[in-house]
Length: 376
Image 1 (tube, rainbow, N blue to C red):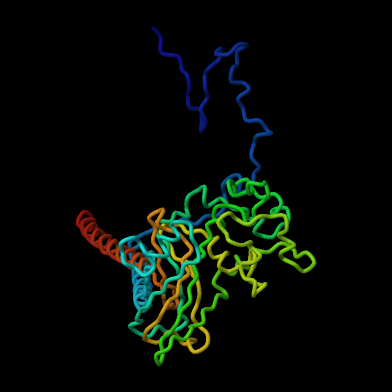
Image 2: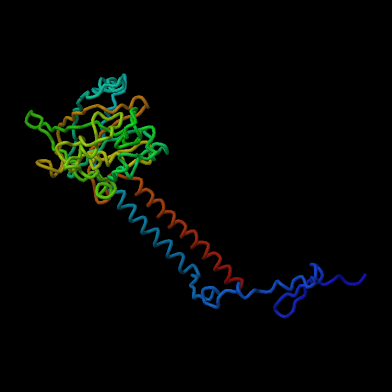
């Protein structure tokens, strides 16, 4: 037999394919040439001739980068850690679980039975002075606001004050979209229907008498929420009640939305600060939300050491889902509230960077000596 047929052979810098007769009519590859219409433009971008910079990472550049990043993270981590350690907190559990002997157990059982408006009191000692401003939070545990069906059960169009959102709420609000009579609910959805409605009043004992501590509810929500995302519908003849006419209140609410704060028209309806704070759902099952700030009157500089009484209107049931409720008094710093986790993360990352730098330095020194020996 003769030599094998040549399928391809090099011709200059290209490859010529010998496939004659492979397709009907001979010259099978005759139409394979580059079509003029498919040829890219002769520009620097299409021909990949743009100037580019590719860093060449050597030991002289990589090692200082690791050490500098590690030192910066360590410094920031130490600052965050010590700043968080200076924040003072006091937690008061008022769940009132059965058998706990808690002062609020009676109200917890009443709320479990469907009753509302029960009041209980907590008397506590503040061991040291809390410098102002002091924030008052409520905390719920075992409460999954991040459940998908729950987190989407709202109508942002309605909450922004659009009139059509009042008459025709979004389907995501179901089953809290309309009441049994078919009247649209405002605000609709499961988030609004489960609004936290416990209330608190704080008193300080001085000279044998309990004096009220003013609690400020202004500015407790995010600025973008209260000024952009949430807005009441346009007033009708100067009346917010008339604007909500033709809607029903959420099933779990005792009153309509326009009565949330009758004494302050700038804090009622959809722009009520407590309502806006609750509508920003939490990512974790244990979360706290800002309730009030102590920054007025004789307590503008903070809460002095001493005896206090917290009166609680216990409305919100949590025992049915094995939840707990707490009230938290906390000071703030330049980094915000108490958050030791962030400082720890920076410390770990900074330590890892420095450790990696030392390992790379040791490897560099070892192989540098070996390369020198090989050269010699």
